[in-house]
Length: 112
Length: 113
Image 1 (tube, each protein chain N blue to C red):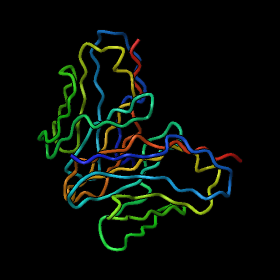
Image 2 (cartoon, rainbow over the protein chains, first blue to last red):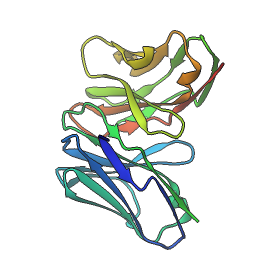
Image 3 (cartoon, each protein chain N blue to C red):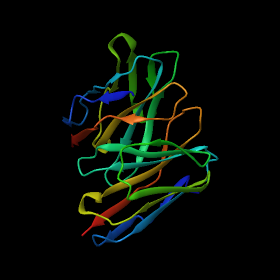
């Protein structure tokens, strides 16, 4: 069983569209994250949720809205997609004891 | 907030060469330190981590890292690299008991057969 799974794996869309990426973890972790990896492989944290509550919200455009219906799920909705949003988005989870992150396989978003 | 710097952007080695990748962090308090590896087209996987105790940490696939508190460093080493070690390597840090993990910019390792 996949520990952290995110869908879709690839997402190709036009500028101005709205899209969502879903993430689920079956590890029983309390904390989930969204990271953005740009074309130079730089990893930047976007959001973090602990037990459905937002605890980290970096400087991310308001077009990005995370939603956590329960502690096993953290979805990312993006409105009015722009060319600069093209990147790989990784979901991750961890327990509160800070033992490290478990990453999903990534969603490669291409905005045309 | 803590930050991480990795000195080498791209390292190219021949098989059997020794590897050392630099990582320095800035944070005044107690930290947890990590190295992650990302093979081409794949997600990040944990190589090793340091929380406390012996500053020399051994991870998977023959990798090790040494925490030197006085230098705020956590360098990754491997005595003899293989072609299959070709990947991107990320150093990461979070403050103790805090899940706000920050990553370095990554070091791309290319191992020539």
